[in-house]
Length: 101
Figure 1: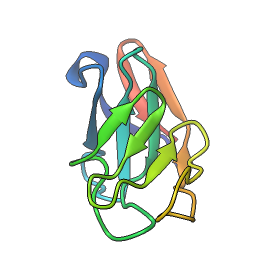
Figure 2: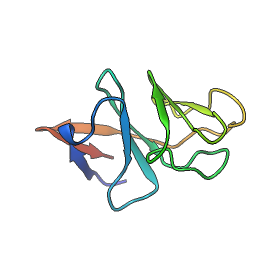
Figure 3: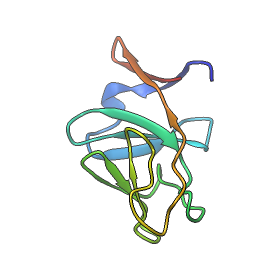
């Protein structure tokens, strides 16, 4: 995937997420520790946007629909009902701007 501008670092508060502008298939997360991660936006258990409506707990994202959990570093599904990993993407930060590759 070619590098895409996502947002400025300060546009995404710690502990929040967003859907990548112009592409509703990628979610961008910023943990409370300030780390950025990008994954597929849709929960692999049932269609639900993780970038628009999810909870972050450490390095995990929790889908509020059925409480499926995913590791933001690997995309791995951590509990039922999800069994399929999320696609992950590389996040690059340069000059206060966040890019997803």
